[in-house]
Length: 166
Image (cartoon, rainbow, N blue to C red; front, side, top):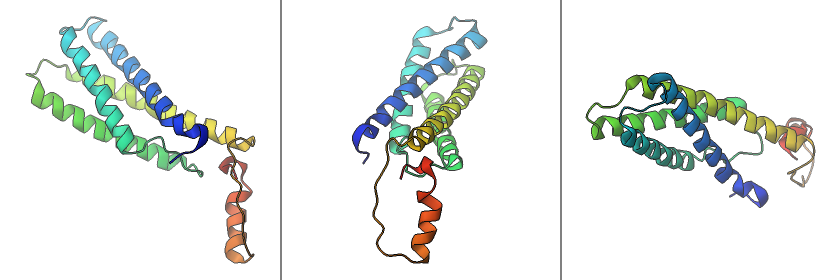
């Protein structure tokens, strides 16, 4: 469980994700339908469904519980995994709920735009945290008892890199 101000990070991050999803949704609408949906009520319901699905996926996968040591590859893979689950759930629901009144090009374009924006946003978030921690904010104090090869290895790998926040 995050402590301090970090406990608000998932709420803020998911809110930004919803803005990104809305941006991707409207951009795909503009590109595919020139800004006018063929069935507006259906597409608005689809957007609300996408928001609810994304919130469930992001919360269940703990997408924004950032560890002390941030690895870009793990965060990108976690984001891609979340997007894959989101696509599978939403396409399954669209297949079973609709009667083929949905544009495949719109779906593909909206998901592609959202994926690119989400991965860029996650990379920027990690970069911001690394800079924030390297300047001495959000630091942790630890006590190491004893001194042997394992402790020396720990000091060399973690404590001497200011981006970790120790």
